[in-house]
Image (cartoon, rainbow, N blue to C red):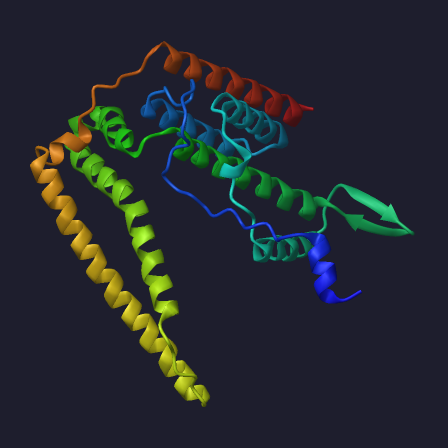
Length: 282
């Protein structure tokens, strides 16, 4: 059977799902209606908990909490980006390298003692990283970018006693979050336009290096120009809407659902600490 027939039997190749940042999933749910400050507090609390108690019990409970939140928010499977092949290769190399460290527990295969300690540590760190990435993704999928700046300004209000410019930080964060997706789109368009331009095929290795250097310089110059133009347009829009103070001002405050969410997170976190403490004592 020919290669063409084999490819036809396999069907069309599924396109990879790109990483979509700072764009909420359409729809409404209890997770979408939560105050942005509540989500930031949950992410901060879970991150601190996993830092001091990075055990399997804590990771499992936090993963269950994240999966439950994704189910409540009706996050579709298509929102999860595809894992590139090179990342699987990196994980495989990292797992093989960690396996060489050995350690307890030990298993015996054909009279040879093999330590699984390094492999288990690598799997635990990988699982912890996935949980933290999923937490950030949940905030991105269920939160409007315009709500994060005001939430940071409200949460940082106690720091004003120390003369910390909380409002200025909130404005800078709000501007960065709003400009980030827009600049990504601009850079993708620039890169696509650059690839469509006709190119001369260099004949020597030195010519190929020079061509790559010239392309990088051209892309950087175009990116800086586009960024400055977008910044000027955003500045005019902010001035027309009342200045930067509007970016950190939002009437949203915690509601009953926010307090319930914080209480559930605290209970699950306390249960994880108790389980980890009992396991260490045993």
